Length: 308
Image (cartoon, rainbow, N blue to C red; front, side, top):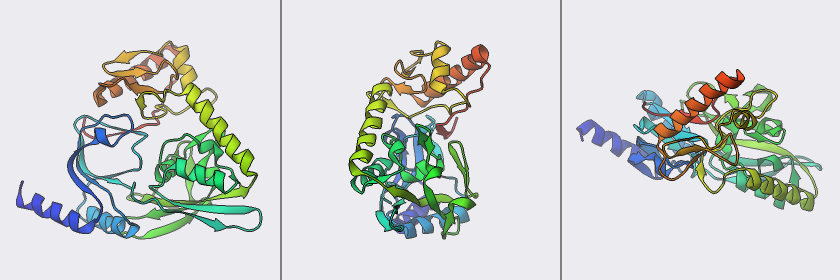
C-alpha cells in the first residue's frame, strides 16, 4: 500500500464513525449475491457524516455510487473502482400531523420500505399499501420511483430531501421533482437523503388487510426462495415484461448459475453459483431474443455498475 492510500484510508475513517470497509466483496451486500470488490464501502451514521464524505469525494473527484439495501443492483465481477456509500444506517422514521384527515411519514434514505409500510398499518394510514413486499430502502425506492399494482411513490410524496456535492441538504417539494417511470432525475452529484409521504387516515383493519393481501400475491408469483434483484426489466407500455418474456418461451433459460425464473419471467435468480457475468449474459440474451421474436426492446430496471 502506498503512503497516499494509507493516508486516504485514515482520512475516510476519521470522517465516518460507521463502518468503512476496503476491498470489500459486494456479493455480501447485494440481494442477488454476486459482485466483485469495491475499493471502499462506507456506512455513514448521520447526514452530517454523509455530507462531509460527499465534500471529500467531490473535491478529490472520486467515483461514488449510493446503495440502500442492495436489492435492485448487480455489481460486475471485477468490482467498483471508487466508493460505494450505503445509507443503511440512516433509518430514522417519524410521523407528522397534516390536519384532521391526513398524516405524513418522514423517513431517512436507509429506512426499509417494509418498515414504513408496517408503520402505516399500525397508524391506519392508507396510500402506501402497494409498497408491501418491495424489498428496497426508502432512498432507493424514491430514486427508482418504485411502484406496483397501479401506484408509484411519486403519488404519495410530499417532498424529497436531497444532499448535494457540497454537503448541503435541500428539501424539494413534489412539484419541483422530475419523476418518470421507475426513475427520478437528480441533479448531478446529489443523492436522496430522505422523503416525506403524505397519506390519508383510514381504517386500520382495512389497511393491514390490504397489506397482507399484497404480500400473499407477491409470495404466490415471485421467486422468493432464490436470491434475486427484483424486477430485471421495466414494463413496456401496455404489457408486463414478465408476460412478454413468458410468451417468448424464455422462462427457465439458464446461463451458468443464473436462470430466468420459472415462476415469473421478469425475475432472474441466482441458483447458488451465479456470477455477475452469468447474470449480465442472461439479461443480454433475453433482450436479444425478445427483440427478435416480439420486436420489443426491453430496458433494464436493475442497476448494473462496476468494471467490465
